[in-house]
Length: 112
Length: 113
Image 1 (cartoon, each protein chain N blue to C red):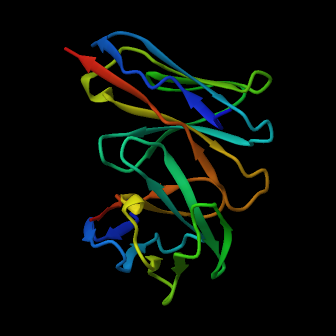
Image 2: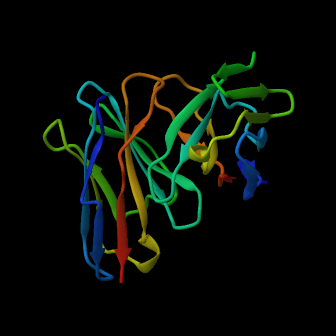
């Protein structure tokens, strides 16, 4: 079964550092997403991406965040200057057309 | 009011029991509804979509009441492997195309021998 692959599985970074979380969506999928889940809290939408541009973003997705799909396969989430409150699981997801989210296994980001 | 509200539990049940989870959502324009399962520190995995007519998948039955904005999940003959957090999820985007999923905080189920 096709998978969404995320790397790294765990990243520890110092406050103020930049991090890039990587995702390889399923190859024939068209819509790409990032969600995050702070420990003990609900999964929250960050951003959706279609046709090489952002479709929608939440208020969490401020100027510190950016996404890109540089080579048609990888889909990255960059956090420019990490804060302690950015510590969370970050899930990438892709969807072929309308239904059928496939989530990656997530990257656990720990900001110290 | 929370967008998607669930009882956090935990629900502690013995193997073989029947257990029911409920969920309410606030956006009446929501178009599609799901139950996801999440194991500890893992990604959410789709358990089943929820349709207005109600639907069943083996031991799992889901119901949707649009008028009350209420979704339910019934698990019959609980197995140890059903222990997980069950997430009520609503697609908050009324347009076709991309979905924006809104998650409840989840209901934790513990099935004991």
